[in-house]
Length: 525
Image (cartoon, rainbow, N blue to C red; front, side, top):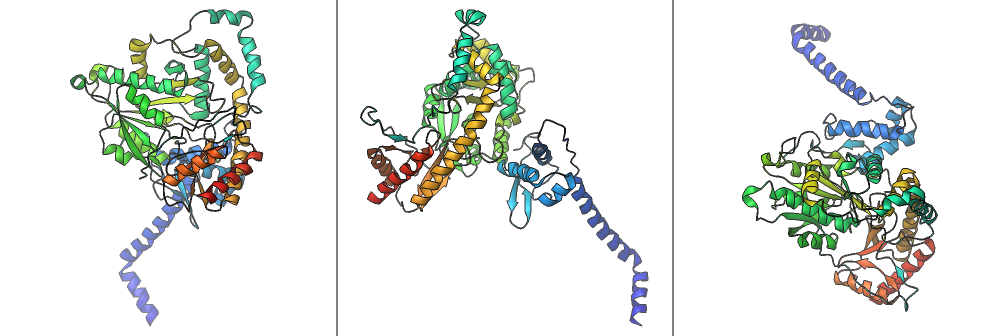
């Protein structure tokens, strides 16, 4: 009789029972549809863009647009490989790039999960304390010709493209080309060079600008000084009630010491903002009255932090809060403004995945100034850099500061233009990236084998990393290590809290010697 009772109960409660079944079915059906939707990615195998990059760009856009919410699980590598008909390496490369930029995280036994990313690209939304002291250890090169210097980046002459550059320099001063160098050039820089540079920056760094927004200058220091002047000029025309108020610039702490001096020398106030694991602290910026932020998102010096996409979006959100201006750049209608100076330091060398796109490429409200240089990729002595200005600041430069003569030789600009345009620079970067990765790996391996307690940080990109040693309990001992190492002809950079190793010019044969000398120093203290 029990089954009759069950049938009677179902018939009596059929509405409620049926709705429960339907709701469960709809829930499972919608979840399945959502899963299938996540896989509706059409790849173009005939396109010039690599397949892994198409997959990466698809998911990056979905996350930025808010379609894929926080904690959403991406399809497994196997599932996506089967669905798209591509290799496992292709999907893994795309996911690794998403991880590197902070869009997703890899959760053990769960897969790849979307992280929290602010929707700053379309809708703007509202402690590491270390004092860095650069070591200025000067030595007599005549007496110490056998010194190993890992305190600063140098170029190995065996990999410097001297033969190509010699040919280009000869071409520059021969025939009709030499005539153009007998007169002064454009204060912004050579037009052909700026056009080539605009295209190169877009392809390699995602920088969105016209050649008319680029200023060529003699290195980062000069261009930073110029950027501060331009911002001050611009703000002085918009803040009618506070003309005598000095601008406040935020800089990274620890960071590049020269930055603080350059900014303060131009009449601005400098505030040091501490770093956390993602870079400069936006929380601390919001707690302080700041007008402009100077940062190095690609590879912070000296900590080597690569700023993830979430922190970049927070920075842009901060800048956008007060950046309401007329689309025609009418300064009379300005209310207030904030700016970010992005120093794209060490951006050419990343050893896991592609280089992280520049912050400037995500800027939609003309708030980011972009500075780059060839000092790290070619040679520190090649003082050629570039400043990409927002359009509203470009107008200020042309009206008030264009009397500055360009600080880079027209011949050098001609040579670099040809070097980049003919793809020599791209080949040079690809070749040196492999070599520097190999040298980095060998040096780290030797240090860890010789000194088991050593810990390495910031080695994923750039041309330097930092090292800490577990046994050292007192900060001042690092300065002692630096001093004693110099007595043994090993020059190491560092601060009170860690050591800095630059390895671009260190070949494999010297790596073992460096580790042995450092080990001897540690045994003596």
